[in-house]
Each structure stands twice: as C-alpha cells, then as structure tokens.
Amino acid sequence: MMTQGLSALSAIALFALGSLSASVAAEEAIPDLVGTWVGENRTVSEKKGYRVWGKKKIEITEQRDRRFRGHFSYPEGTKRFFGVIYPDNISFTWVAADSKGYNQGRILGVDRISACYFESGEEATAGCAVLLRQK
Image (cartoon, rainbow, N blue to C red; front, side, top):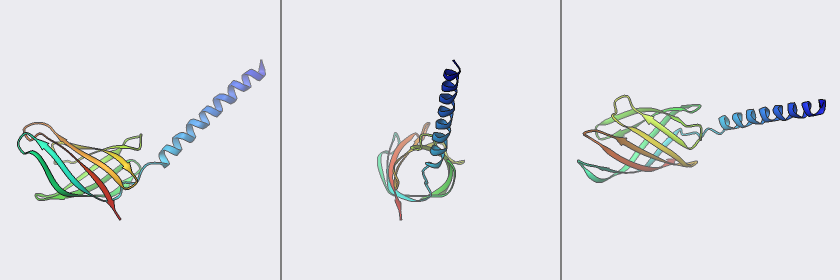
C-alpha cells in the first residue's frame, strides 16, 4: 500500500517536472522576428478590385518575449505597429493605433513569414504578403 502511494506520488512529481520543462522549453523557443522583411503585397477590395502593390518592406525593430514593435513605410507615410506571437510560436497579430484593420501572420520558416491585413467597413480590404527576412 505504501509502495503504491509512493509510485503515484512519483508519477505526479514526474508529470509536474515534465510540464514545467515543456513550459520552459516553449518560452525558450519563441521565434525572433526582429529584422527587415520584404515581399509582394496582393489585395482585393470592393473599391480597388484585385491589386498587386509591389515590394512591401516591414521592419520589426524590437522584441521582448512574445511582444514586438515595428513600422513600415507606404506612399502616405510611415505606420508604427505592435503585436504578439501566440503561444503556438507560429501565429502572430499586430495592430496600429491609427489603423482601422489588423494584421494576422504565420511564421513559415526562420526567415519567411506571411502577413495578412484585414479591414472591414467602407474601405474594406483583404490582402496578404509572403515576406522574406533580408540579411
């Protein structure tokens, strides 16, 4: 009876230790998104139809754990954004204070991501770019 109690206690301790190790490993495995990312942006909207916007350059300048900041430039100026990487270490979302929409993305590889923008309402638009990190 005492042996069974110790075995169950040992199993619980090993499970807890394994869970803690997995949690620490997941935190260590957070992808680094800092860098300059370049790709072609393709969108569709009611007002502008299907468009290819040419080269898009995004700079992620700072990252702390799952949180990051950056900016990109476009003909009307520069837009600053901030976002988070989800616990799956694959998906991310970023938003801008002066934007009506948001970006959802996926990490496709160490130096390859996709970023898709969605905006509803009068200027509704949907579009994606596959971006490569420039070295």
